Length: 206
Image (cartoon, rainbow, N blue to C red):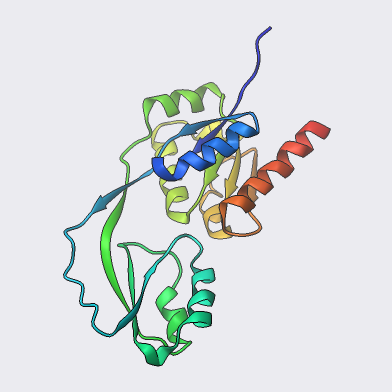
């Protein structure tokens, strides 16, 4: 008897994909990790920390960081230094400016898109063995949309359900013929997995 294993395409960088791959494995889903962005660290800048009361390091959920800063720090105690990549989602500095903070930004790395999908992923897409695709940023979703079209595998999306961490990421995928598209209720990995659990539960009931 041949067992059918569900697979999910994970588009995060390798290190960030490990916990997600483990969570998927617990659900009986094999992760096909295909990092679509590569981090290139720049020469360390000369950071002037005089008068800086805090360093801010952002993730995909910058809005929670705004609330944390506003709750624990005070504008008169010094400026904030935001260390990040060359492209950031949202407007952290603008949100904090409205709270009275002075924010400066230092770029420490560049996130560059890969040039093409790996042969392993193209074969998996073309053979229809991937059931789900997970997207954690609008930029990554845009890279996938471009590369899957260039690989001539866009039609394979018709057999997959796309899970996006935000409406912005989901909107970037709208041009592809997905079986279905699902947006997490909150922009974090637990919410994305909860959305996946609902889909899995509905399939089992069906």
